Length: 153
Image 1 (cartoon, rainbow, N blue to C red):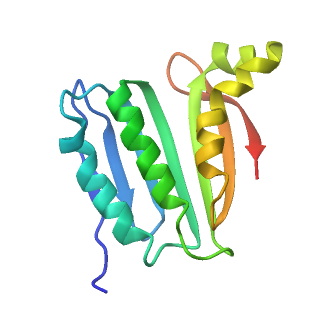
Image 2: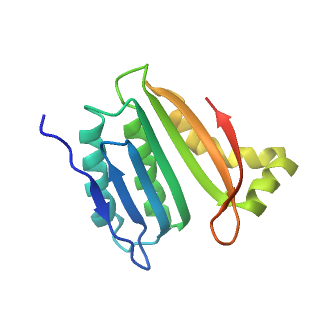
Image 3: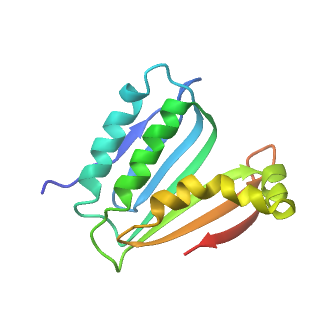
């Protein structure tokens, strides 16, 4: 297999910054995701992920710093996560990092049902081949991490 090169897609007012770095296993989506044509943005990402899972790094970090996303973006992000769960090595680890505003993070402690909002993610990760961890980060108005918690492993 030819060595996979990094994929960088610059952010626009309606699309996130996407950085997929093969050698470090760092995959990140940062910003808003409101594209009119989500396929145009996310299909190359999913194609890259499909190549990545053939020879992944021992630890893959998927960082989701998406402030707001539309329905079509959420479908593509779900496809990306589902594909990463097919890394065919149970000794490898997939870390999913989710960054949310501090208020939402704190609300999760107050309302037990708030954790149910992550059930779509945990459902996707449930039948994963690699070991999976989900980590939540509380961020302030400047996107600085204030708190974090390991939710699932």
